[in-house]
Image (cartoon, rainbow, N blue to C red; front, side, top):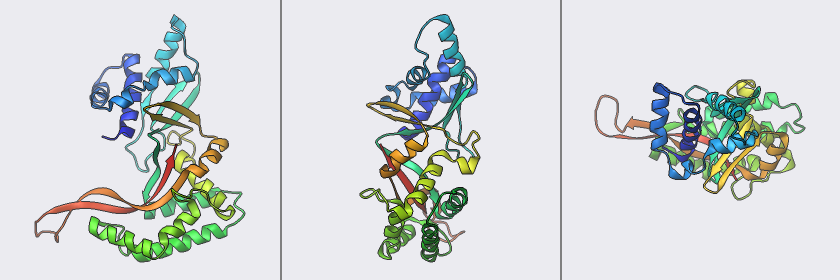
Length: 283
């Protein structure tokens, strides 16, 4: 289990434990909490969130408000498309829909090439203030060239997918993608691509176009690392601030296992991988 998932489980466990929750879901989250990273547990996210919303006292009224808030915590996920909200809770009529991120760098989004093309289509249709539509056209041309490399499938063995990644690098597709959205070494992009990248990063974090502002759309980013926690509302100022902290790359993602020989002939299984477009953020 990754520390990113640990962060989700520890946050929800602490809330449910404080609220005195019982039942099978509590048994399951307790098991996950018990196996979670000590570094994550030591951040005590529930106390941070109590302080963030102003619940700092120990008098009966404050304690009751804390219990009400803790009881409202829910863990989202497990659906397609995957919601951007990992954990949500309510306090005095406000719903906090948190996207949880752990560490100094983390994924904002990582989807298969076909899924990313559909995602970009939503972004393109949803942005009203793009002055340079040529940036979208360049992305579509890039995707046509990517499709030529991928062929019939973006999934396959590690050997097959690594060969396709190498070809994409050799043919300049990686550098064209990073010209539009930034690389880890040079995250800033030209004015021509700025609004396009901003739209993509905004949707990668919030999911507003995908989920229409409903529960799956995040409105806060809750970042954790050993040195502390930070909760940030996802505002235009927040997006502008992370623009030069975000990058993109073609990558390979594990997708289970597959037979290494034709169906029915038996033999070994090998790791199944998929070509994805990965959007990364660093703190």
